[in-house]
Length: 229
View 1: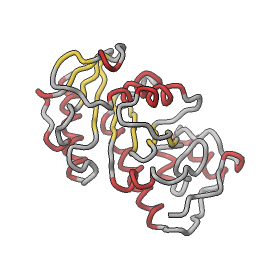
View 2 (view 1 turned 135 degrees about the horizontal axis):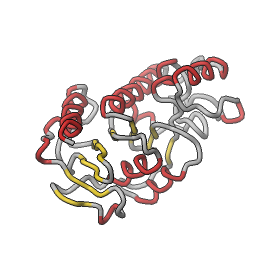
View 3 (view 1 turned 135 degrees about the vertical axis):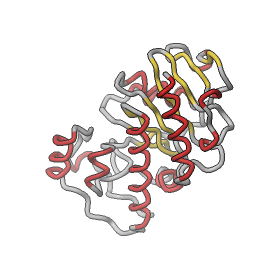
View 4 (view 1 turned 30 degrees about the horizontal axis):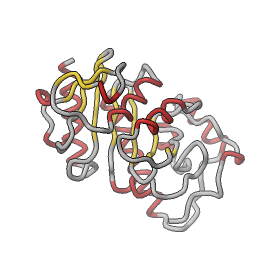
């Protein structure tokens, strides 16, 4: 497990250097069987150490999951939800990055994705990104709602909060989190202008080639368009 824990600590430093985890916000975790190693509460992602990670039991209720190490983040249920719904998820990244958090305060583009398919890279690397209705941090009902969604996704955007991303590795999860932040930055830079989005055929070609989740391609799923900002 040591290599995975080192990957978590290295990811924290990279995200902190990119300015994507202000203060002590955000949390990271890696999975090893039924154990999860997670960044502890109140520690900057840039100051993590392998020896000072929280250890939690994936199968226990969140309020009884702590096994050893420092006190874990109250947002462990979000990580737990992504691990439980997809056994291929081995790492989870949750950030309060500025542009993604700002975009989370806007109406969703559609019922299945907070953000529209404005670039091929967002579709290829992330796929549809459901907006999860607001709840207080650590709310276990919100986590259960994520776990029970009946369509595929790799990441969610928590309303008035920020992204939560699950990846097959920590590097993959970090890459998706950065892509979400950059897509949000692009959309906000467009201001109130309505962008050209990729067509259903263009989205389908990308999702089939890169096996990314975007299951609803028709206009019936779309709201009134990209929100004005």
